[in-house]
Length: 154
Image (cartoon, rainbow, N blue to C red; front, top):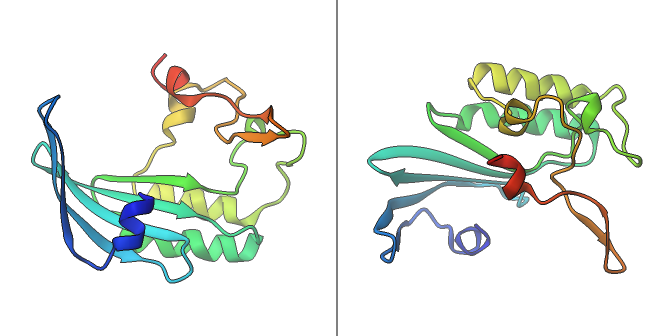
């Protein structure tokens, strides 16, 4: 995504992995936020157009709420939003250094999910698990986080 972000000028791309016979065609940059907080890309995979939205939500609560509210216009029938949300959606997601608290941006995310017919894939697959998708390494030691790939497909 980083490479696409830098070169995103509305042009088209085509990605193929010939060894697997898989092909993603017609990669098109739809929107690149000026502050670097959002990248919206459409890809065609197996004949279906999928919208990928990569985000880095602000740390400030009210700015984050406004940011989430602005994403609604980019949602299509097949949308995947990924990235750094900077919001604790569930008490199980709160860690030692972050609290569940009264975060007005949480309601904006719930609204975005409702309007865009989006689901939290992690929470759907692991409804009772407490784990962190973010990795924090301090002085070479993992302080918070978990490898996602084995957990997502378990």
